[in-house]
Length: 109
Image (tube, rainbow, N blue to C red; front, top):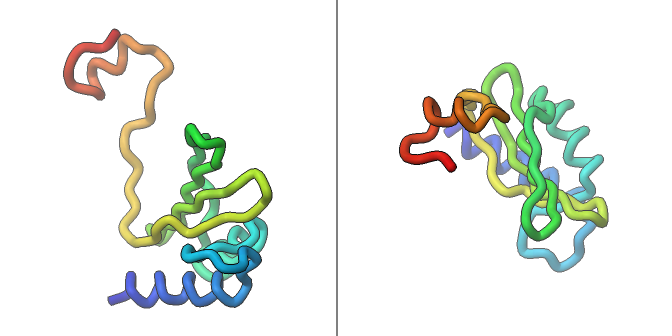
């Protein structure tokens, strides 16, 4: 129930501050999303990665365990991918491929 309320609140806020006209997704400027997530949920960016299409995928998490995933485009717009509760951190990937054998089952090249 709380997750439903949270997703609805994030969606409503994003729709109200939307800068991407005609989008089927919930989108707004990245800076507006970041401010909203911090002010309303205490979420800060904890991880990020670059997609094959050149989009920045960002994970925001609060101390309470709420989380939001944003897809940010080079033009400064961001779209809500998903949001939820009970975030936990898995094993941090190692740059040493030999150590991946303990994390990832199967052969490692």
